[in-house]
Image (cartoon, rainbow, N blue to C red; front, side, top):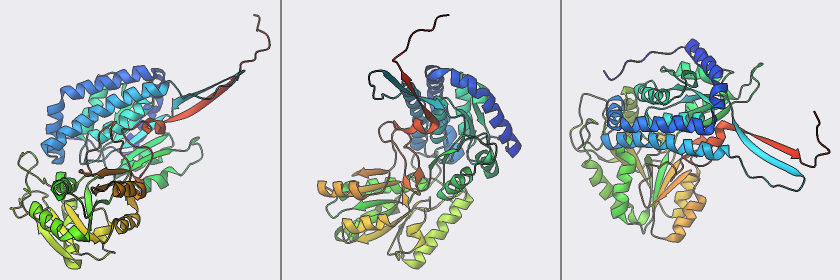
Length: 461
């Protein structure tokens, strides 16, 4: 037993939005500097609980120790980064000035933000969305994933301890119906979501409805699914490529939206790379997340295990399974053997769908141009990778690739706040990149004032 959580209802959602609406004027009036002090205070609290919160993720989401610790550190980074960004944004934008006229632009918070968070980054992602909304002056109702309510609860504890009033941040643990109620509620101004493409598209459609009495159009910030591919050119350094690909595909059992699930390999090196990847996959150790020797932990729940198994069976029927982890797979738990598959038909669901598990599919291509054509046919465009020693190839892939984050000659996961702003294009997301200088703009609305400074006399009282 990791934690006990209530199951919020639609009525709870309505009360949380009402409380946020009441708290909004005071939280807005605190100003960017005051709100930043709350966020940096919460960051310090999370920092003091770093090991405890990493251990919580190991238990709550079967996240291996290095990944769990990195998640906590990313949450701290988000709090501090957005606190400083809010102060910068509060200074306003520089506008063109002419004699006799004064122009200014300020950014004001929108109101109530509903944050709907996933389980795979149980502290970092809800912290990122929540802290951005709060820093910009909005009040937040946070709906965590039903699989991971305890980690977001630690965030709410830290924010309230640091000085956030209760109405400014509320937690609604529960299932999909409470998230849907928040999306529909006319008192919500912004919806920040991270999760599957199917759910994200439903949110966008629902949020577009503007019923009578709702005097605003809801803003949706959505990071959605990915079918992330790594391109390997004929001149790639395979000593670099193999460990980076394995890390990209199988760390945390492939349960990252940025994880590699497709490999587009030049014909000239395909056989060699497949042989080396097969050897690397066979020796991966599947086990419990709290064991430091574990390479691939269990997936999050039974439904995920069954989904992965279905895709592996499909791949075996349509193509071939090149390699699987050779060690014993624990029987008690939602474990899946990391699997390498190849020779699938172009229309295979294994190539098309986001599996969200430890399955890597390999395709042969005759050229980099052909690999880019294959990428262009996918509706997803979140992350991608390239291994090549040719600067011209790097330039071509950077120019043509539709992905939001392209990684060259390294693994494709682990974006850092402020260093690699993260977010996808096409059906992988809408909105500015998390951890980047544009992200807070989604939670505010601009106001421009133009004043004629050629005054005609003075007012005499």
